[in-house]
Length: 446
Image 1 (tube, rainbow, N blue to C red):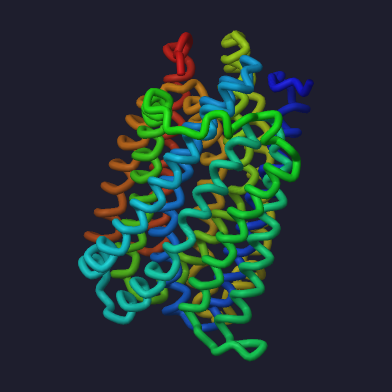
Image 2 (cartoon, helix red, strand yellow):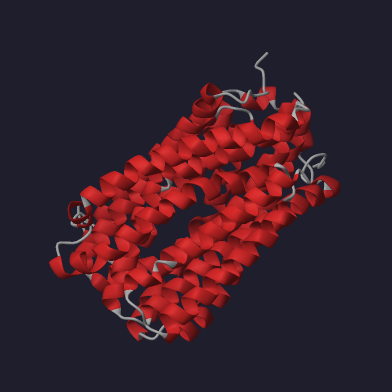
């Protein structure tokens, strides 16, 4: 019988984190390629893809918050070697995910025109954004199911299975992006709309692939989810108790980024296009850090489930060191080859030169992020998600105050606008470190 508990060693950390890194990197490559295609269409399309991308990211992170709460519970059951508990938690999580996704679709179609109409200065940007989101949102149910299956695979220590779905989705996304955006192989050139349709196709296959893996590996026999094919109100309420603060937390976190992009749009098309390139780079650089953070989340919950809370701080410190080393290496490379990397997005020399100072700022900010993300997910793994929510709201409010004055009031240079990342990640690191050192998380039952 496969052992579900983990040990706080570098070997186990890397064993779990490496497949997650690959699974996160692959869709980031798709996002990177999509931005290159948008850059070929023009600065407006590149910039608007930033706004719509962040908005859709909010929707996907609501799903991620729900699946993260389910993952924490499943990882705790895994530490207890309780497969029945894992199956029960998973099945209720699946029902909740479907309900959430359908509700979000309806809410989005009503809310998006109001939000973008109020926030965007340009009518062209408004029309492009609304049209894209109306297409994009149809992939949300499949994405949320894929997120839930990913959480399951991570919780049971089989994170390598995440790679297959990511590969399938990314290959399809890139191929259909190329075909539908530029009108290849007999298809009409659909431009920005084509990117939305390609993403929906990719998410449908992503969800179906992750479900197919579950059955092809006969995990339904080991984890008898169909024995729990009913809506357990008590179990669902417990899941929401853990997940709700995470969902609100992610909404605040990415919502702050959306407001940042709304403010940047007011600075002009060049600033918006440059910021979308920077967001793409931030995502690529953060792949390893987020993988280690997800690993930290799951391993902390697992270790606590084994009744070994004294090992938690040592585990978080080990993962933080690995994250910092990874980020430092990539930061040096980006600083050395800034122009060459940015030229992949656009051949507009003025846009590249305009972006370089801001690139240097976010590269340095990733060093702080490498520590704060791991520490923060260590707090998530303890199960006290209300503390996470409190820290997130505080940090986002400080972030938005900085953005309001520096961007909206003072209309500062773009590199100063991106200095907001220092504000957010620094305060998040301080809050997470203080809570973990306090030991108040010990004895938390989920």
